[in-house]
Image (cartoon, rainbow, N blue to C red; front, side, top):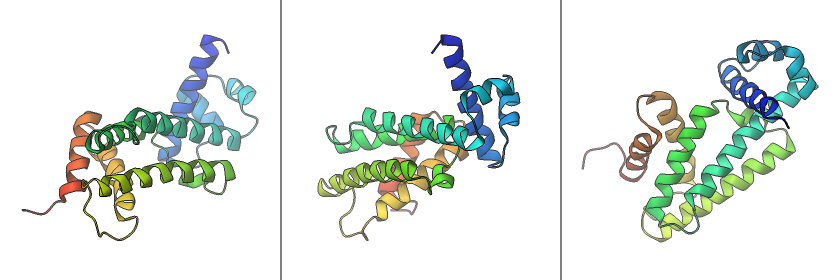
Length: 180
Protein backbone atom coordinates (compact mmCIF):
# COMPACT_ATOMS: atom_id res chain seq x y z
CA UNK A 1 0.00 0.00 0.00
CA UNK A 2 1.32 3.46 -0.87
CA UNK A 3 2.41 5.66 2.01
CA UNK A 4 -0.33 8.23 1.38
CA UNK A 5 -2.96 5.49 1.15
CA UNK A 6 -1.69 4.00 4.43
CA UNK A 7 -1.86 7.44 6.10
CA UNK A 8 -5.41 7.95 4.81
CA UNK A 9 -6.46 4.52 6.07
CA UNK A 10 -4.97 5.20 9.49
CA UNK A 11 -6.67 8.60 9.59
CA UNK A 12 -10.04 7.13 8.60
CA UNK A 13 -9.76 4.36 11.21
CA UNK A 14 -8.71 6.69 14.05
CA UNK A 15 -11.37 9.24 13.08
CA UNK A 16 -13.90 6.44 12.85
CA UNK A 17 -12.98 5.28 16.35
CA UNK A 18 -13.42 8.78 17.75
CA UNK A 19 -16.73 9.45 15.98
CA UNK A 20 -18.15 6.01 16.71
CA UNK A 21 -17.31 6.46 20.39
CA UNK A 22 -19.47 9.59 20.40
CA UNK A 23 -22.14 8.27 18.03
CA UNK A 24 -22.28 4.52 17.28
CA UNK A 25 -24.50 5.27 14.27
CA UNK A 26 -21.96 7.60 12.59
CA UNK A 27 -22.05 7.15 8.81
CA UNK A 28 -19.18 6.50 6.43
CA UNK A 29 -19.80 9.93 4.91
CA UNK A 30 -19.50 11.60 8.34
CA UNK A 31 -16.31 9.68 9.13
CA UNK A 32 -14.80 10.54 5.74
CA UNK A 33 -15.68 14.22 6.14
CA UNK A 34 -14.20 14.38 9.64
CA UNK A 35 -11.07 12.62 8.39
CA UNK A 36 -10.77 15.11 5.55
CA UNK A 37 -10.95 12.50 2.80
CA UNK A 38 -13.47 11.97 0.04
CA UNK A 39 -16.11 9.40 0.93
CA UNK A 40 -15.33 7.60 -2.33
CA UNK A 41 -11.85 6.99 -0.90
CA UNK A 42 -13.44 5.24 2.07
CA UNK A 43 -15.89 3.29 -0.09
CA UNK A 44 -13.03 2.05 -2.29
CA UNK A 45 -11.50 0.47 0.79
CA UNK A 46 -14.68 -0.58 2.59
CA UNK A 47 -17.73 -1.86 0.74
CA UNK A 48 -20.01 -1.24 3.71
CA UNK A 49 -20.22 0.49 7.04
CA UNK A 50 -19.94 -2.92 8.72
CA UNK A 51 -16.59 -3.52 7.00
CA UNK A 52 -15.37 -0.15 8.24
CA UNK A 53 -16.55 -0.97 11.76
CA UNK A 54 -14.72 -4.29 11.69
CA UNK A 55 -11.56 -2.51 10.53
CA UNK A 56 -11.82 0.07 13.34
CA UNK A 57 -12.33 -2.63 15.95
CA UNK A 58 -9.56 -4.70 14.38
CA UNK A 59 -7.18 -1.75 14.62
CA UNK A 60 -8.15 -1.28 18.28
CA UNK A 61 -7.44 -4.92 19.02
CA UNK A 62 -4.13 -4.68 17.15
CA UNK A 63 -3.19 -1.88 19.54
CA UNK A 64 -4.36 -3.92 22.55
CA UNK A 65 -2.26 -6.88 21.40
CA UNK A 66 0.76 -4.59 21.04
CA UNK A 67 0.21 -3.26 24.57
CA UNK A 68 -0.02 -6.79 25.97
CA UNK A 69 3.13 -7.86 24.14
CA UNK A 70 5.02 -4.76 25.30
CA UNK A 71 3.97 -5.39 28.91
CA UNK A 72 5.56 -8.87 28.78
CA UNK A 73 2.88 -10.29 31.07
CA UNK A 74 4.49 -13.72 31.22
CA UNK A 75 8.13 -12.70 31.68
CA UNK A 76 8.46 -9.31 33.37
CA UNK A 77 8.25 -8.90 37.14
CA UNK A 78 4.57 -8.76 38.02
CA UNK A 79 4.51 -5.16 39.28
CA UNK A 80 6.41 -3.92 36.24
CA UNK A 81 4.22 -5.89 33.84
CA UNK A 82 1.03 -4.63 35.50
CA UNK A 83 2.12 -1.01 35.20
CA UNK A 84 3.27 -1.46 31.57
CA UNK A 85 0.00 -3.16 30.69
CA UNK A 86 -2.16 -0.47 32.30
CA UNK A 87 -0.09 2.31 30.72
CA UNK A 88 -0.43 0.67 27.31
CA UNK A 89 -4.17 0.15 27.61
CA UNK A 90 -4.76 3.71 28.82
CA UNK A 91 -2.96 4.88 25.67
CA UNK A 92 -5.04 2.49 23.53
CA UNK A 93 -8.27 3.72 25.13
CA UNK A 94 -7.29 7.29 24.31
CA UNK A 95 -6.20 6.57 20.73
CA UNK A 96 -9.04 4.13 19.97
CA UNK A 97 -11.93 5.28 22.21
CA UNK A 98 -14.59 3.11 20.56
CA UNK A 99 -15.89 0.26 22.72
CA UNK A 100 -15.53 -3.05 20.93
CA UNK A 101 -18.44 -4.61 22.81
CA UNK A 102 -20.77 -3.40 20.06
CA UNK A 103 -19.45 -6.11 17.74
CA UNK A 104 -19.42 -9.05 20.13
CA UNK A 105 -21.72 -10.95 17.81
CA UNK A 106 -18.90 -11.08 15.23
CA UNK A 107 -17.12 -14.43 15.79
CA UNK A 108 -13.64 -13.11 14.96
CA UNK A 109 -14.06 -10.25 17.44
CA UNK A 110 -15.44 -12.62 20.10
CA UNK A 111 -12.48 -14.95 19.71
CA UNK A 112 -9.93 -12.17 19.76
CA UNK A 113 -11.48 -10.58 22.84
CA UNK A 114 -11.69 -13.94 24.62
CA UNK A 115 -8.04 -14.73 23.85
CA UNK A 116 -6.79 -11.34 25.06
CA UNK A 117 -8.94 -11.46 28.20
CA UNK A 118 -7.55 -14.93 28.89
CA UNK A 119 -3.99 -13.61 28.73
CA UNK A 120 -4.81 -10.86 31.21
CA UNK A 121 -6.69 -13.24 33.54
CA UNK A 122 -3.72 -15.64 33.51
CA UNK A 123 -1.43 -12.73 34.32
CA UNK A 124 -3.67 -11.63 37.21
CA UNK A 125 -3.56 -15.23 38.47
CA UNK A 126 0.23 -14.94 38.39
CA UNK A 127 -0.06 -11.64 40.27
CA UNK A 128 -2.08 -13.40 42.95
CA UNK A 129 0.34 -16.34 43.10
CA UNK A 130 3.24 -13.92 43.57
CA UNK A 131 1.44 -11.93 46.26
CA UNK A 132 0.76 -8.70 44.39
CA UNK A 133 -3.01 -9.30 44.31
CA UNK A 134 -4.67 -10.44 47.53
CA UNK A 135 -5.61 -14.11 47.50
CA UNK A 136 -9.12 -15.27 48.28
CA UNK A 137 -10.99 -12.74 46.16
CA UNK A 138 -13.93 -14.08 44.15
CA UNK A 139 -12.84 -15.66 40.87
CA UNK A 140 -12.27 -13.05 38.18
CA UNK A 141 -12.76 -10.12 40.56
CA UNK A 142 -9.50 -8.30 39.75
CA UNK A 143 -10.02 -9.00 36.04
CA UNK A 144 -13.47 -7.43 36.19
CA UNK A 145 -12.26 -4.32 38.06
CA UNK A 146 -9.23 -3.51 35.93
CA UNK A 147 -10.87 -2.62 32.57
CA UNK A 148 -13.25 0.02 33.95
CA UNK A 149 -10.42 1.55 36.00
CA UNK A 150 -8.29 1.85 32.86
CA UNK A 151 -11.19 3.27 30.87
CA UNK A 152 -11.98 5.86 33.55
CA UNK A 153 -8.31 6.84 33.75
CA UNK A 154 -8.15 7.27 29.97
CA UNK A 155 -11.33 9.35 29.82
CA UNK A 156 -11.45 11.16 33.15
CA UNK A 157 -7.75 11.96 33.68
CA UNK A 158 -6.84 13.51 30.32
CA UNK A 159 -4.21 15.79 31.85
CA UNK A 160 -2.19 12.82 33.10
CA UNK A 161 0.21 11.02 30.81
CA UNK A 162 -0.54 7.32 30.30
CA UNK A 163 2.28 6.53 32.75
CA UNK A 164 0.86 8.79 35.48
CA UNK A 165 -2.66 7.52 34.82
CA UNK A 166 -1.27 3.98 35.19
CA UNK A 167 0.14 4.98 38.59
CA UNK A 168 -3.37 5.96 39.69
CA UNK A 169 -4.97 2.80 38.30
CA UNK A 170 -2.40 0.41 39.75
CA UNK A 171 -2.51 2.11 43.15
CA UNK A 172 -6.32 1.99 43.14
CA UNK A 173 -6.39 -1.66 42.09
CA UNK A 174 -3.82 -2.77 44.64
CA UNK A 175 -4.67 -0.48 47.56
CA UNK A 176 -8.26 0.60 46.99
CA UNK A 177 -9.64 4.03 47.80
CA UNK A 178 -10.13 3.72 51.55
CA UNK A 179 -7.87 5.10 54.26
CA UNK A 180 -5.35 2.82 55.88
